[in-house]
Amino acid sequence: MASRIDELEKAREAMRDDISYLQSQSMRNNLMFTSVPEDNASRERDAGSDGA
Image (cartoon, rainbow, N blue to C red; front, side, top):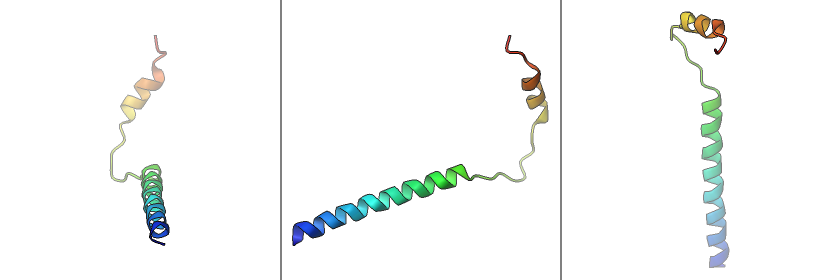
């Protein structure tokens, strides 16, 4: 009986770790930045360069 409880506790901890990881990945993939000025000049320089 005790080994079954230990097994279930380990499984629960593994699931909690998985949930934490998935939550952090979801938050990372859904970042939104507001009130940050966009630097259009560097974008235009990058678009105009031909890589040579």
